[in-house]
Image (tube, rainbow, N blue to C red):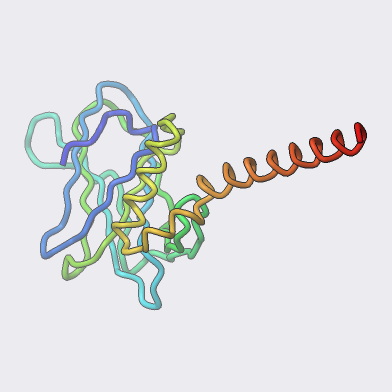
Length: 182
């Protein structure tokens, strides 16, 4: 799967391993900082996901390992993502400075089964509000969350809260103004 060369901008890749590892490829034209994190749904026993990053050698003979996260060695940290309204397990974040070239990331497990989310980059992606809501619902749906889960996302709760508070302030102002004129 080819990914955007804007690797410093946050990108989310949903994946479900079904017997084979997943390979992502990016071609860089300039030096960039690669930041990767593996995420999976909270569970008593985490899926032993592994990630390896390699660079194609310029002479097209093999690859050179840049870095890896090995499933059995990852300490999974539990966290709640308020925007997604879901609990997850997150690997440590790996970061590597990359020079121009072709790079591949492979996500796998010993038996290559399980769902994951690969988070690439850290800079805000500046998508619009409704596009972000669509992305949130896509991730929730991927991990099997109910449609109604979207209503407890901070992307819905905060605007609704602001509208309710504004309505209450307006109603109070109108009531006070009406009682002054009576």
